[in-house]
Length: 422
Image (spheres, rainbow, N blue to C red):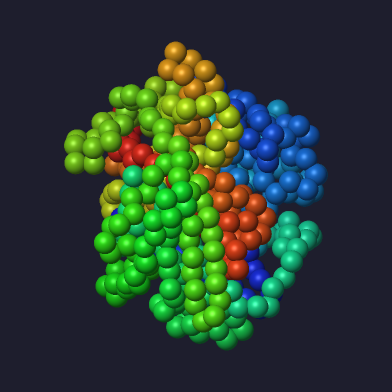
């Protein structure tokens, strides 16, 4: 299980650091900054990235809007206009946050890997090369956020899930922004807030209680009586009162969905996991979700490897030989758990087939980095969380009034599988 970790939010406020806490496509179309595009692996710059947009690809590398023309010419082979440095672990504010990997065709990636990497060397070298390119780009361009803040803020970091209570495994996290010029981490924690959550339609509400587990590092506010079961399609209001400040946020939980039967996955975490040959995943075992209507739907997928370091091996052994991460941090980054934990998010438009309205999750094969057992969580997320993820200054668009961060919701289904070579 991914333990709660403190990480610095991806945008900087002037003199302040906002620190939320990290918790543990048949042919759908994806939305690139609001423009639908087919998932055929090729993205045309002029068609899908308009001036001023703050999102680009289905991998949603934050902050790529306004890239100079030369950035489009980094592709190692002709005929692929998709933005080349797709292995950057984040772009906004030079943060290192993984949001997926390898959308380009395999032959293009292979050529690039052979050009810049050597068999037997860590694939992280590849990331560092891309980071250097990016830092050069940063030195010549202004990617700083527009509005700057000097105030201290209350930071909300929370998702609630359909069919679940607000428990210690998924608490509401409340922290403070602290100064980057001498702020103390003991000022980060907010343990004295009055926190309530209300189901808007029925006005049923409950008070959440603070807890902290010094052994695991987990903390936050939860519903000890499990008095409110979160339901899809309902709206919930979060109210936080602390030191004379009132913060409110509201989210409407997305409708539930179903994952179509798939021989490569099971929903039973206690069963023997079915196996998938890595190179056949997208062809033979695509994740397909059935939804209730044909409209743009934000989705989020988390791929989490259940194997322990150092007993893990990269799936890219055709290029680098049989090897695994050199260190535990190479396997599970301190900031975001990458590449052990990898995420993908996009807006998808369902296609219609005999099953009804269906979204095929793209790029799954490229998001499994290691051989072994995986937990794959598929989510239909609300607008608050989606805007927080992809917008520039996303912490201002997460539905929080009187503070910053996000109060989102989702319907989710967890799948289990085992990735094998052959």
